Length: 80
Image (cartoon, rainbow, N blue to C red; front, side):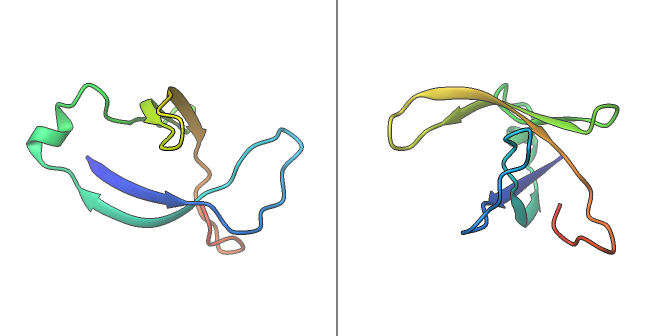
């Protein structure tokens, strides 16, 4: 299991489905304690979706569940 840091590009064109793109900027292996956390993100390889059970908006304190669609980098596009 790994933790990943995602960042948004400063200027980003919205897609037709209003998706938001992120850049994977850091990745590190999780400790055993982190892996058993009930709020950890999970990846479904069949749908290429990452489910994050709790994301908190630091401005409002409101929590959300998030599903991200993962697109692997290709030779033409190095941003996933």
